[in-house]
Length: 406
Ligand code: TMP
Ligand code: ZN
Image (cartoon, rainbow, N blue to C red; front, side, top):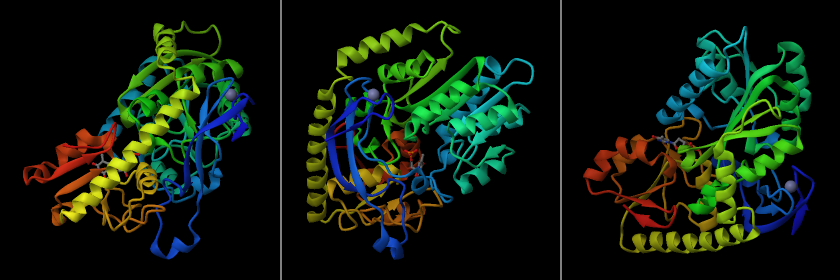
């Protein structure tokens, strides 16, 4: 199968097919099962610019509706990270007279709250009403819209050029990324920067983190594809910094051409990606084979534990859990519930597999023998919190980079 590249118009060739899948964050009430939304989840790579992307996407209005359940402030590690981000911008980029920062997909204000507290001009662009409201409660100014060229022109007219345009776990979600990049190019001040942090394609391939693949992740960014995109839309990639967040994130900094000296990391990562073959279809084909092995190993382990009369529950219900449970064919018969600290998810079912999501208190009450750690990217924080489970002999089941018990 082929489809046109959303970035350069080239040919995207399909390499991975996860079949019929629901929305990753489509946590639903039992009464809504009948009308559940499904689409074909498949991934391909562009022959020209190497951008890895979904073959089909789910309309953004269906994904980022008013009760979008992901709250970026749900993790202490994330809260600290985004506060540090804000402090970095305040110290290094927002130093001129009356500076201005815009954040695309500002969610519950986890980053902008620090900027607002410092009294610096800012604007969050966040279409999901509930999280936007949560950020307003923190003193953050929000425009409740999707960001694109038209929004950018409006913001420029009202607020003037931006010294920083930021996005975290959001830019790679936007199917009209070409329009977003054109919009940023319009909005940036002459020495402004466009900084974004997104799960790294090199991590997805390197760790077989196939659960990163779901409807919201339209793009799987790498240094090479981001560099190509920047050049196509009149910007320059000037830095690439790896971060531990979400299991392996890359933070990209783009500026106007010639305004900033590119950091050596850009060339270093390009070389590393070339050596790893990340810009080749074979990378996706290898991922596809490793995913199949994980599917087999995880399902057989859970079936074996059930036969042995062991109790298994899930820990953390990220959107990733929908991909894993649906792709591996795991339902409430193998995992009766998943605990998660997000109030908006509790009392609902994981999309497609219909495993109930419940409050974390249920974890201690159930005292399970095993817990599948779906929020594996928060392993350190969660394991530090659940020492009683481990002390009682409870064991964690992980499936990245392969199925193992710790
Ligand atoms: P994320 O991987 O997309 O950030 O999602 C992590 C999910 O795990 C989110 O729904 C919140 C949940 N979670 C807990 O339930 N307990 C925790 O201690 C942490 C850090 C996350
Ligand atoms: Zn392309």
